[in-house]
Amino acid sequence: MSIFWFITTLLLLHSCTPGVGMDHGIVNGKESIPHSHPYMVYIYDKYTHTACGGFLIKENFVMTAAHCKTNHLKVYLGVNDTNHLPEGIEVNAFSHESFANKPGDDIMLLKLKTPATLNKTVNIIALPKTNKEKISSNCMAMGWGWKEYNEFTPSRVLKEVNLTLLASENCAIPHTLCTKEEAGPAQGDSGGPLVCGNEAVGIVSYCIMDESTSYLTMYTKISHYLTWIHKIMNGFL
Image (tube, rainbow, N blue to C red; front, top):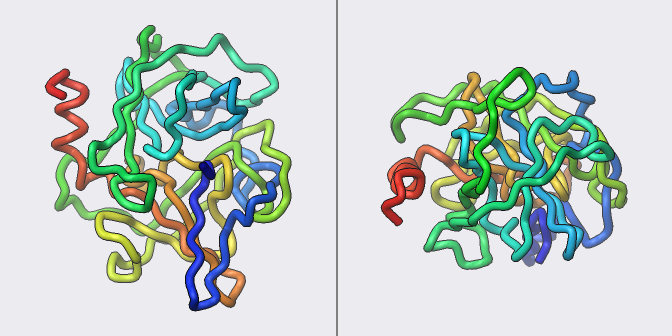
């Protein structure tokens, strides 16, 4: 299963990830100041050699995309350079019950078997408080994924890019947010946050490319799932 989903249609839409790779994470992005995003989490399965992003929302919970789920996930906190990983933490995975290996309901919580110790390099990010909360259009995505949409070489260091959120009617799937630019997340960036106004409002899910050089990137809208999130974190599911 692709770590960063792609969509193909009869309307000449092309995949952001045609099956080959990328270079240094976040296409047309820039290198982040080390540990400037202490909520960022590197997620890796050493058996399948697949990687995703995620973000810490509580001392013992990481949020990511449901399509990142594999059998041997570990999370790595406080990472800047993936060549120098701390000890990985085992997790229990809770993907949304309506997720069906296709776009939609692409959200998962990972419960850490060893809770994080919060400090300057490991910390949490806030979530929206309600589904009706207004979202800033000035946003940022970040990750360790490919640098180009058709070259394979994952990034060693965290990269970031500023993005402008589109109006919701431009998004193809219900309960999603979207951006359309020549920059943005790529393979390996799945599960990372879309941060708008100092809150994690979206989860990197997939993208499509039209006949221009712009990419429509889709993010799971976190505020739609607040009830589900709180049930998981409170142990009711």
